[in-house]
Image (cartoon, rainbow, N blue to C red):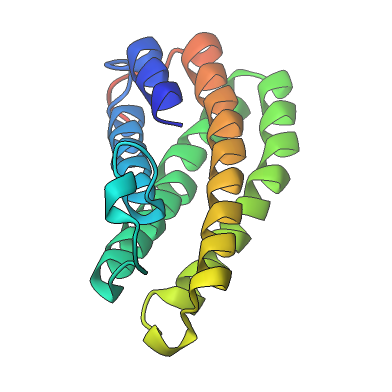
Length: 161
């Protein structure tokens, strides 16, 4: 996941403020996810359940990332597709339902774990966090297709911040 966001930043960085900000949020989300899941280089942190503060921090980053996507970047993509071509709009329309699957999973995770210490059980938490990580990985790949379309075909101006 982290390598993909680095590649995305190298490929599209500097082309559009909204994309730059969104990719930076993605990077922060991935680091926080890895820390929470105890993935390298944070595996030493994963001997016990993460604290409620750590879970809440992750959930807040997750909600911020989803919001930025839906209310900033996706709207810009749709607007550009509406102006510049039906092929891009068809791609966007085909990808949004797939992206929505991970949105639903992320919202459920947030509702279950962000503020509810009593619902956390190590086994179910780990399984649900892992499922969320897989869904986010798929989401990032789909989002990258949208960003590539926006960047390559529509050459937006820097005014979309």
